[in-house]
Image (tube, rainbow, N blue to C red):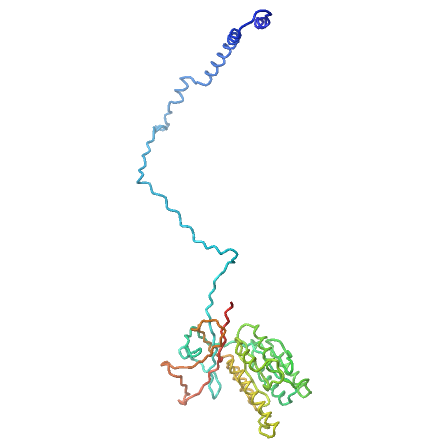
Length: 413
């Protein structure tokens, strides 16, 4: 090192670049050879160690060695390769037009239920034991196929709509007797309400299963029967329309027990309008009971202009009461004496509690809101009109009680 430093510090003479590079290489070469030799010695194992590592070890139990040699893998035949299954076709999709909402399609098959009461004309008793084959149903003259049939015996839901006005105490007494007789036939499972009307309507009792509450309302009206009433007007059309509205909110079969003279004086609705409402009512049957029958029998034909006009008025009222019942499949009663009321109420109960329910799908499935006329008849096994007879083979006449028709649903546009 001392010589190198002295050599670099020589003041005179110009050393060439080759001489300087050769001197540097002479000093570095021994060091590089020593480092390369030590690295080679560490990276390459000796032949003895290599032989010891490559020699297989003999198994302890004398089995085959761990090295089984090369494994020959046969070459696959392109014909033996199973092609992959084709992808499933995409599901068909439908895209609504832009701005159009999703629409679901629902088909409603119309179905008509017809309640038919079969009562003997003489005794007014229900005729049991009839079969589906004994009934024929016609809609607008076209026979329908009956798909459902059963006998109904169920509790009743009824509204007593009673006239209570200053028409005369005889009319009020007849109403109270009829209303009281109807309450005697009620059963614990029945729901009944009571409403009176003159110029306006008045709720005496809301729907209840406690018939004592209805009877209490009748007794309270009886205490006022001989007192002057507020109004002599009787708006039966408006009162009946309100009763239909109230019952339309209740599910199932409902009944109106209409006890009135039938005379209308100042209703907003006309006769045509209320008849249309009665026809359009669903699952509502009207049983009408006229009041003042005995008074009309005693004073009919007394003569004079006023007498003739009064007779025409009550004849028209009787016809209206009868029409309300016939259009809905109910019954009309015109009792003259109080002794007739128990039998009349028994007939109403038998008609309400014992009926045959017929179900069919109309052949005319159009929902056009038209009124469809109904006709029901009884036939024997051979298709002839059914004839009934008693034990002594005497012929028996019978009545069929059912709705005059129904109004088809109006299709919503």
